Length: 463
Image 1 (tube, rainbow, N blue to C red):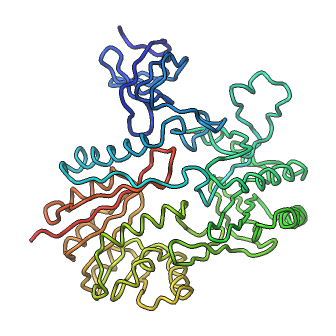
Image 2 (cartoon, rainbow, N blue to C red; image 1 turned 60 degrees about the vertical axis):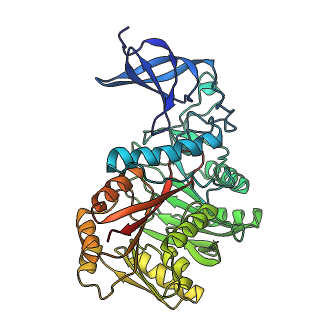
Image 3 (cartoon, one colour; image 1 turned 30 degrees about the vertical axis):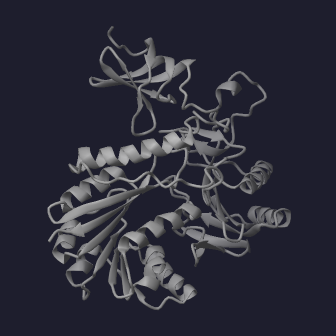
């Protein structure tokens, strides 16, 4: 048969592709089926037809896979937050481990690398310590709401439909954050609707209420509420802040970030404290960190400890080594490694992150870490350190080619590479392959029910 857009076709889903979609074949063509699980037989409609592949959506589940489970979230399949709630968690881990191994082989040319089973997250719900909810004047309806006249369409506070900037579901409860956060979110929604001030139009760029960001301290079970608005209005915000503090004793503080920039980013041009403390304190392992509304902090505190324990194990420190940490951020990895290192030097281009790193060292009584603000390419050229171990923890785009070249010139005996993107991990390890052997890779799951996976690689210099 010829695969055509709009066609309904029965498909046997044989695998799961990166991005979480099921993989089937029709007339020899790869068809990616949103929401499908390997082992499903489905009736699906072709919604996109390209030269090499097609995309489809399920019309009817004809025979469910043995790996399919009931998604507990009513928004599953519509919200873009976590697409794998319908896939049994052990299979999620297996697919994530396989994706890392296959990407290393296909992108980096690194076959036969020991890739260990992924470290599981625990718990697999309620694990996120930071959630951002968009406020808009246009609500995207769930299928069951389409014909209901009692559903107001002019307001939503929630999460985006995948691949869209202006389609927002009104989310009553997100299962990825601790349950107490949903009660706070519900009260904020109620007060926003009573305020008389308009939600922000994602197309018109007019309105007042833009985002609600909730941050949670696992160590203290406390919340920081950040109300992001398009302008200042203390008269409206102050009573809301006091109401939240009175109603929820686990709220540590409420702040207001203000931005009139059209970009849909929940970071203010400036911040105003409204009530309580403008910061939270949380821990990763034994270390305490202070977190403000706009601070970077790992979104899964428990899994971050497992990630850093892997980094520590792969670094193999005994107290005599000098460690260099590239892309050191707010200093979490240097602080975690500090007891077993002679010294740790971090390089970071973001000035605010460097300031946070120095404060975090003071807070934890760490005296053998120092941080250099600047572009890694420039700093490495004049660095007065011959490191025994280099930690690399780059953004999703991976290392710049110039950083790879500098790292090869530096030639440390060991490199520990921390990655949030298997594709750029594979590319960068391939670029280092002439000088370094990839000894092992440990995937660590920090985001259950998504296809995202962190991985830590141990590289040893070839003699």
